Length: 405
Image 1 (cartoon, rainbow, N blue to C red):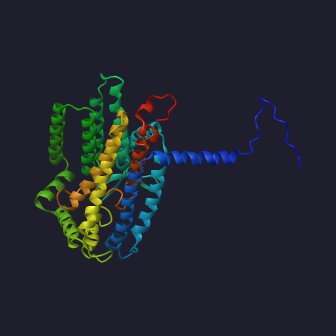
Image 2 (cartoon, rainbow, N blue to C red):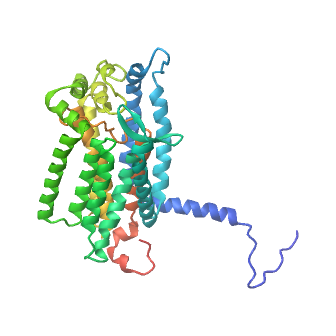
């Protein structure tokens, strides 16, 4: 057997074990990720996505029949097949985003926000229209910039509001309000009244958490009411939706059908694929999927979904109780407010308690851009709230030099 050459001090050793070391390094990084992320939050999200798969499966035949034409006949499971593809891509996005260190997630969110702001500026010029609304850019695939702006907006706004820790004299409130006004104006130009309401809600939550005074809270509420009145007077889309909600019309008829579909199954539902009211719904696989769940799964299934959304919100808030970093608190609060707000707006619309918004049920409804953007937001949330379990057990260890936080 040939002897190995003697090792000379200062010379590099042969790299015979480099591949195994790289493999062990990656396994170590995954082990750290699994130890630090909020596994309860991840589990709740995956349960909602699993429910979404079943819900789209039972809603797909109704939507396929309504959208089929004499020339194009869609398969009953057409939207389920597409949904599974989007979900697979969304899960990859969620996983990759959750692996990011907190600072990297912040930088990526800020860059994404700037890119989506540019995209929103381009939408009125070169965007494509669907059902009278110009909200999409055709980049080989259809992209809805407002969906990706949602998680980016929360992170960028949290970054700006956290500047006050460096210099309390910085006008962070005014800068944040100006950004909100710009985003709101671009969304109303599409028009997208529902997303504008959601963005304003997220902005208000984050401003309130950052220390907005009672006086400024009152001013913000007054500005919101003024904006709602202005939207009613100057934007036909908002006026039609509010009028339909208050006094009937096409949009009201859709919501009325959704409510009756939701209640048709009683407490236990008709059973999967046995519902008939869903055949009358205009968007059974997207906007009104909660009603489909109500008909075929019953009010008990609807209650479970509501509880799951509340559990996600509660879990994030519990995670933030001992958090000392202002950016983390604001970003996580904004991200969960966006997810929870969108969910409850959709549910209230299906219950005929809110004007129709054209907004999907997060993590459950069929969607392309919306599914990827929501998974990206959850990935950011998992990345930002990652916590070293050693520090969680021993807060005094945070002061020790060299301890990874």
